Picture (cartoon, rainbow, N blue to C red):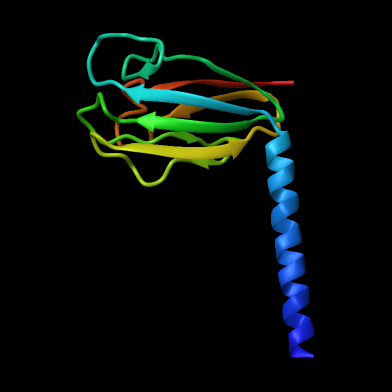
Length: 133
């Protein structure tokens, strides 16, 4: 009886894993690279304290792989989209570190992405994330 239970568990587990992999592979993937900056040299992929940061526009139904390269920074940074998305790159990245967070864009809307390190949002380290139908 135990052997049958183990076999059923393995079949269900592997079947679910295969189904999830097949489903994930059929969805579009968008890779986004952001580099926090702690200076005043603006570039399209950098975001900083000035509040004039890139707008990220993604189609609903897309998997996003956001890569945060804290290679140009002098401070610790992270990446958050809270309201309605629940995205948070953990742990915070120290200068010289790179981190990745993946998430599915399931609802349309306009959201704010930001760095949740104390004072960074207040200093303007935020931008707009738009999920379009």
